[in-house]
Length: 130
Figure 1: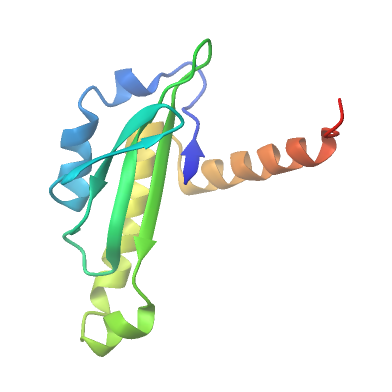
Figure 2 (figure 1 turned 90 degrees about the vertical axis):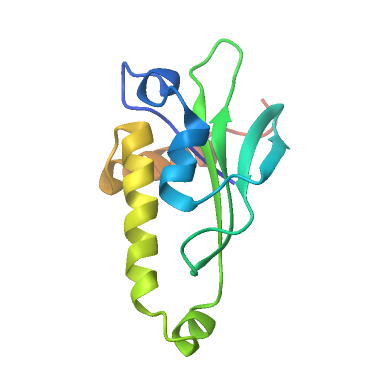
């Protein structure tokens, strides 16, 4: 599961007032929920795009901090998708993921990547025994 921060000064609930509808618009019908860090995230068991096997997404709530977008994309092996003659779906899947993440977080792929790098660097600099 990856967690994504919002753009500075923005909040997830303001950007996406109806997370379930947003997920269904991008990936298909929500089939249930799954608990993650005390928050219920939406699950799409049969995504519209054949590249995806399963998608879990939603708002991860934190006390005293801004909520984050939690997402887990489970993808089928590329060989299987290509063998079925659905290679075009791979490009559509990448676009769907990036568009969904950008609409929810207000951050483009480069900004999200840079943020992830900074958080990994911050974790590496923090001693475990403090």
